[in-house]
Picture 1 (cartoon, helix red, strand yellow):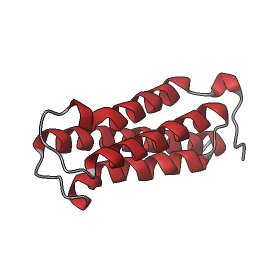
Picture 2 (tube, helix red, strand yellow; picture 1 turned 90 degrees about the horizontal axis):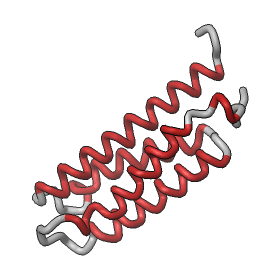
Picture 3 (tube, one colour; picture 1 turned 60 degrees about the vertical axis):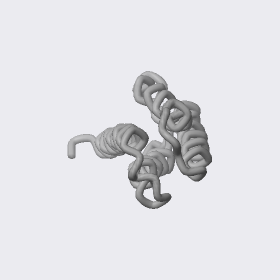
Picture 4 (cartoon, helix red, strand yellow; picture 1 turned 180 degrees about the vertical axis):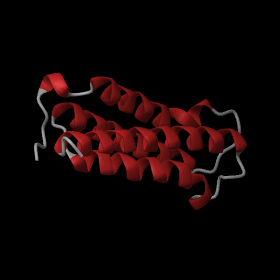
Length: 122
């Protein structure tokens, strides 16, 4: 099972989309005009930086653990308004649901592609 596919078979658009989503998640609370609880800011910044690092690792050396990490990060982004108590905030909650869902979809796509590439003919 190859853990680092040849460069020409890499899907870089997905890696750069992951970078863009990470930046959007990290900055999302600062673009809302509503009053937010203090936890929303460090949460978004930490998760955004973590997803940014995972996307960069994915560009440098593609491995399954980065995609699993991105999947977990996307789930956390979508769930964090409820866990951290700012789900009442409609704008940020909706943005984080959308961004989280996009990260989840991207991670699932990458995991599916990796499985397909690792097991040709299945």
